[in-house]
Image (cartoon, rainbow, N blue to C red; front, side, top):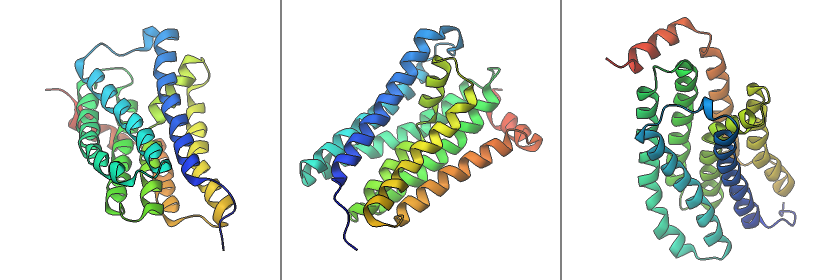
Length: 226
């Protein structure tokens, strides 16, 4: 069945721009309205933040290059994403460990664990399927969505709403890709099924493990500074 008229490159560029805007807005808004909630200043926060910002900017640039049909340049620049992905993983782990003495450290580290796991899986799938555009662009977008929750959480904090509202907001963003698939193909793309399922499973496991004593004990052993 032919796709309905919808400029897919425009969708990916625009949606990645929205994600970048939400991340910047979230951290900026929370810093201005709730400075008391900010963690103690540490260089790893700045390093992780800059790497994450670099990732979201790169994804926007890459989407723009595809829109302009500059595939060769897209592929050359794409290699830099490997360094960013490694940096996100390492700095994310270090940040969890460095700040495990915070009152909300267990919550933060549990959420961060599944964000890093899903980001790594989805990014890796994006690399594996780099020669299959329909899979590649979806996995890369979903990798971005898997890591957007901290920014959404800070938007909710900045607006002084119930912090748990960030979860349905996250789910709504993930569902956008499936909705677009259905609008254009009348079916959900396999990459969308895989990526969305991983994110939803991660959300479910996070909510479950936050009340699990054995998981708390394990995290204490792994993250506590000695």
